[in-house]
Image 1 (cartoon, rainbow, N blue to C red):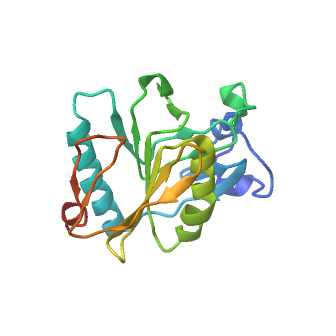
Image 2 (cartoon, rainbow, N blue to C red):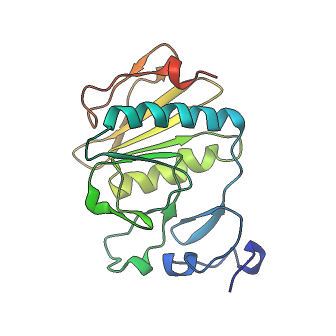
Length: 195
C-alpha cells in the first residue's frame, strides 16, 4: 500500500488504476501519467472559488448542469483508452461545470466538463497556463476560465469548431462574465472578487 508520496518514483508514469491505490494526504494530479503535487490554496484563492461556485450553483439550480469544486477528480481519457483504469490524466480543477449527467459517477467525472475554472496561485501559474491548457483543449472542454487573483481578471478560452481554443477579451472586475455554455447567466466579477 502506498501511504506516502515519497514512496513513488516521480519520473515514472502512472494510470488511474495506480492513483486509486494511493492512501496519502498530499493532493496530486496525473498529467499524461506524470504526478504533479498540488499546493494548498491561499485564503484569497478559496474565497474567490467559493464566491464563483456559489454564483454558478445558483445559476444552474434545478438544471441538468452540476457544479463541483476541488477536490473532485476529473478523468480525461485519451481516445485510445478504452477502460477507466487506463486513464493517465486525472485533474482536480478549482471549479467545473458538467451538463451531461452520463459523465458523472461516484468517483467524479469521466470525460470533459463543459466549463473548467482554474485560479492561478504563485506555484501553479505555468502548469495552468501551459500544461492544462493543452489537456483541456485536447479533451474537448468547451470553456477554460483562468482567474488571476492579482489582476482581478478572468481569461476565457472557448473551443471553436476545429477543436482549438481562442481567447476572448479578458473580463475584469466590474464586468459581467457571460457564456454561451450557460445562456442567460451574467456573473458580476465584483461579486466573484468580493472579500
